[in-house]
Amino acid sequence: MAFINQVFAKDENLLKVGKVSNATPRVLSTTSTNLVEFTPGFANTLGSFTSDSVESKVLLFDNGQVKTVRNAISNTVFRVDPQTVSIPPGTSFTVYEPSMYMDDESRLHFGKSYSGTMMQNETGIDLNFGRIRNVSLPTHAHDVATKQYVDSQKLGIWNQIFTFDGDGVTTVFTITEPISMYNALVSVGGVIQQPYDSYEVEQYDGFTRINFKNDPPPLETKIIVRASTATNVIMSPAIEEIFISADGQDTFLLDNEVMDKFGLLISIDGVVQSTLNYDILTTSIAFETDPNTGVTTLKGNEYKILKFAEPLNLDAVVRVLNLRGKNFHSHTGTYYLLNDTTLVPNSSYQASGTYSYDTVANSNNTINVTHDMIAHRGGLHLYANTTCSDLYINLPEMGSEYSPDNHLEVKVVKNQATANVYINAHVANFMNYEGVLDGHSGGGVVFAQQNNIPTVIHLEYESFYRTWYIKYGMGLWYVNANTVSYPDVSPY
Image 1 (cartoon, rainbow, N blue to C red):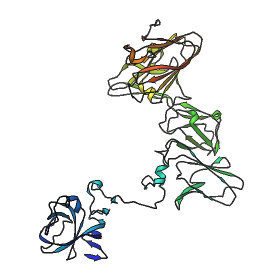
Image 2: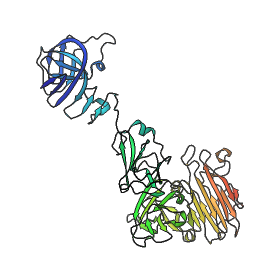
Image 3: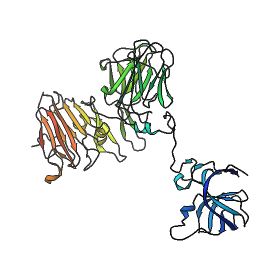
C-alpha cells in the first residue's frame, strides 16, 4: 500500500482523492469486507442525508486504507468497495471527494469512484459530465469526434471547394475544414490525382493538410480540392470504385448499382469522361430455383455494367465516382424496358413471399408491378415497347396516410408499336378519382387508346388520400373509376 500526495494504490486499485467532503471524524463500530458501520452517524434530518449524497465518496482511514462508498444502507451503515479486505473496528476515517479512480477491472473513472448504471459496468472512462479538449480531427471510425467535425456533417452534399495555386515548390496545402482521403477529390491542372500514391490527407495542429508526396504541383497550375462533408464510406454521399484495365478492356462490373447515369463522375487516368464516352448497362438475366419450394425467381437485370465506347490501354486507371451514393435510387435517366420477352412478376404470389416470373407475352400482356419495383428506385419509369395490341399495368397497394410512399412517382412512356395501355390502381387505392372522400371503394384506371402515337403519363402518389394523380402527360389519356383486366378493352 502507498499513499503519496493524496494518491492511494493498493490491491490493484488506484485512487487520487480530492477535497474533504465531511471533516467530522467517525469510528468504525463493526466492519466486514463489504460493509462498514460507524458512529457518529450522518445527520438524517429532512433533506440533509440521502444515499446519493454519499455515493462514490471516499473513506480514508487512519491506518492508511481506503474504501469507496457504493451506496448507503442507512445513515450509519455503508456498502463499500473494495471487498477484499476488512478494517479493524475502532479505526477512524474521514470522508473525501474522489478525484480519479481506477478499479480492479481496469476501469478508469473521473469524479466518480465506480461506474454505476451510466457506464453499465463496461470498461471505459466516466468523466462525470466533464470535458475532453484539444483532440485532433477524427480520421478513423473509432476516433473521438470533435464538435467542429460533428457540426460540419451535412450528409448528401458535396459542398466544399478549395483552390490553391501551384508554384513548383510547395507540396503542403492547408484546409480549414475537416476532410479525409475518403471524401476528397483532388485535381492538379484538371487531372484527378491518385489517393495515397500522389497525395495524403494529414491532420496537423487542428487543421487538415493535403501533402503531395512526389513532386510539388507545377508553377501556374490550379490545385482544386472538392469534398463532401462526410468522412467515411458508410456516411459519404458518394461511392467510389477503382479499376485497373487490361489491354483492350472496355467493360467493367460495378459493385454498386447505378440508378442515375448522370450522377456519375468517371475518369480514365485522371481525365474526366463525357457521358457520350460510356454507358451503363444491365447485368444478364439468370433464374434461381429454390430447392425447397420449387419457386423460380429472377436474378440480375441490375445497372452494374460500365461500358466504354472504345477499348482502354493496358493498366489504365478507371475511377467511378457515384455522386448519388450507395443505395440512392432514382428513376431519372433510367427505365424498366417492357417488350414482348421482358420477364415480369406473374399474377401468382408464392407462399414464400417471392414472385415467380414470366414474359409479358406469356402473362396475357400484363405486368403486375410490385411495391419493391417502385420503392427500390424511389420511383419507376416504364417504357412500353411491346407489339401487343393491349398492355395492362397493374400497380401495387401503396401506403396510406403518412406513409413513406407519399410522392413516389410512376412514369409510363408508350411507343408507337404498343396500341393501347391501361394502368390500374390497386383496389385499396384510387386512380385520380378524388380519393377516400367521395366514398368510392377504390381502384380505377388511366388509359390511352391511340395506335401509332407515342404517349407519356407521369403519375404521383398522394398517400393521405391513397390516390394516384396525373402530374403531366402527352397524348390523349382517359380516367375511369373502374379497373380493367385482360382481355377487357372497354373500360367505359
